[in-house]
Length: 355
Image (cartoon, rainbow, N blue to C red):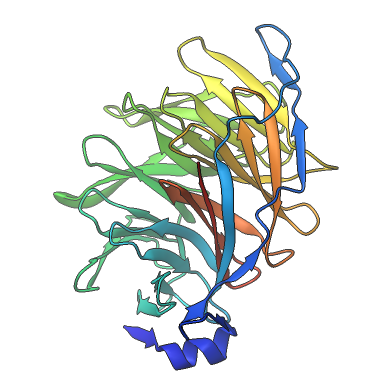
């Protein structure tokens, strides 16, 4: 494990110094640059024009630079207050202490190119590593690394999620999804309907699993027992469904990359809604739903932005990145915080909210 000490950290990432002499992250004003109302396509009544009154106030937007060349792809706030991220460019799992600014780097092995990272029910970091074609577990205490190789050819591993029974499910853009039981660590791989494209994956409060197929332009519901999947197509053709996230009611939110939209699939009624993100030719990449059931997305258009959508008002707020063009490829949070990984800026970003 490699640790970047405070003096090296300050020199390397050019953190400013606070009044106590410790490193502080780069910050920007938390004021949103725009508030707009989306136009929904729905089988119900036409949308109404409302505002974002009552939405928790964003109090800070901060950026934490990481070592150059890391190309952080995904990020996961850990139970101990640290933040894990995948260093896709260096084959390592990074661990940031947001208070001290210290970063530890844990090498994952020769040929590693980690994509996704999540927190498991055991408190460990679980990584989907497309370079190793393996699921990787990193112990949160010892930093020991376990590698679970997938059978067969490389599948371009992408994202993972644990179901309510403690089984890890994952996607591979090569045209597969799969599962790994930590108590019997032999990964199983299943062919995805429609072939290549499986990308983001989520689990609902009812323990239903859904993944998004970027190349397939659909989402799919996985039958956990049989290992089969049923495709569900959004109303917009060739929308480029990239990532998915369930809210507390089991609604599945979808970032539609090609269409520049956010979609909502309602399993209880088998209906869809879609809203265009603000601006000209938006590109919706990441999606995450916070504890208040507000939906966060990232937009790659122009200088890039993080976007918050309030389903109750159909209003958007747009927050510019600290580093223009940073390319936030994934979002994940904990109460009062949304974290993102900026692959093009070699940085992590956090938006804090409350009130």
